[in-house]
Length: 123
Image (cartoon, rainbow, N blue to C red; front, side):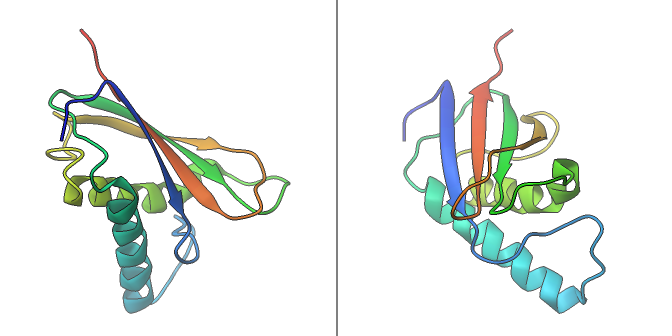
């Protein structure tokens, strides 16, 4: 893998969203978390890697228009970031390596997905 300055990764939704307002059974939550984490790992495998701290922006594209709170989908983004670590894109997701993910609402799409933008932090 080569060191990167910018990486865009599109993760198709493998299942329903993980939402901060949900009160799911722990096994349902665990299965959704694993699905999102694995989808991110699959999407980012062989994409390259970062050797310096990064900033992550997660843009969520849903299949419906209307009002919704992108910040409530942070648990989905957390599972995705864990998958990026699993894929070797990031060495770790602790505060020394990652700022974010900052959540953004994307445009309505035919298929639900998340676009992750990872930028090298320059000093």
